[in-house]
Length: 296
Image (cartoon, rainbow, N blue to C red):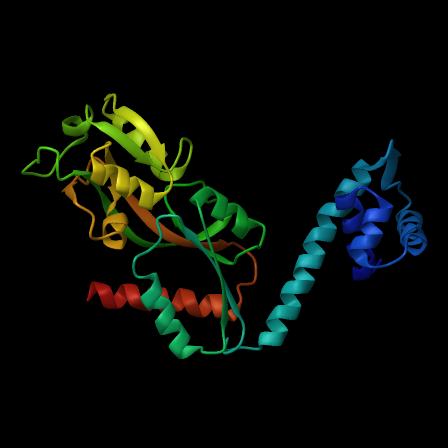
C-alpha cells in the first residue's frame, strides 16, 4: 500500500459511500472501488461491508483507518517541516483564543508581526474546552485557554493567574472592601458563560466548595450585553479581571474577590508529540520572553 491508497481508504470510511468518497477525491467510482479491492487482497482481510445504503467498517478496517490517519498526518507534518526548513519567516500562525481573551494579545501580535512580517494568521475565538478539541483535531496549532481542564494530550505553558471581581451598577449600595463569596451570594447574579463551560463552572464550584447557595438569575455569554445588563441594574455579576480591562467605561462598581476564594489560571497549549510549525514555535518563544520581561 502507498500513501495515496491510505488517503482513498480514509475518504471511503468517512464518507460511507463510494460515490461520495470519489466526489471528495475528484476521481471516478470504478478506480476507487478497484483500489479498495486491491487493498483487501493485499491485506487478506475484508475492510468494508455494505449495510443498506451505507458502507460499514470491519474490525480490520478500523485498525487500518487508525494507522492511515497517523501515517497521513505524519506525511503532512514532514512536508510542512521540510518546506519551512527552519526559521519561520514565512508561514501561518493558527491560534485559538478563549472567549475571555488575553488583554495583552494585540500587543504581542504586533511584536510578532514586526519580527515576522510575512507570516499570515488564522485566529479563532471560542470556549476553552472547544479550543482543546480544535487543537486535538489540528484545526489550530496553539490555543490560549482558561484552566483547569483535562490536558493529558497537550503541552501547557502557564501564562498568568488572575483574580475575579464582583461587579454591580453604580445604583447599588457599594462595599468599601474586598469581598468574599458569602458577601455576595444573595445578590441577583448574572453568570458569564453558560452551564458546563469553564468560567461558569469555576464560579459555581467555588460557591459549592464553601457550601454557599448563589442567587443566579441569568446566564449571559455575550460579554457586551452582560456589561449593559449590570450597568442598568438588572443584576450583578462575577467576572475575571480581563473583562474589566477589555470593557472600560461602563457605569459599574467593581470589588475584588479574595484570591483564596476564586481565581483562574490562563495558559497556552499545543498538541504533544506532534510537529509544531516554526511560526508557532516562534510565538511560544515570544510569550516566554514577554513573561520574563514582565517579571523583571
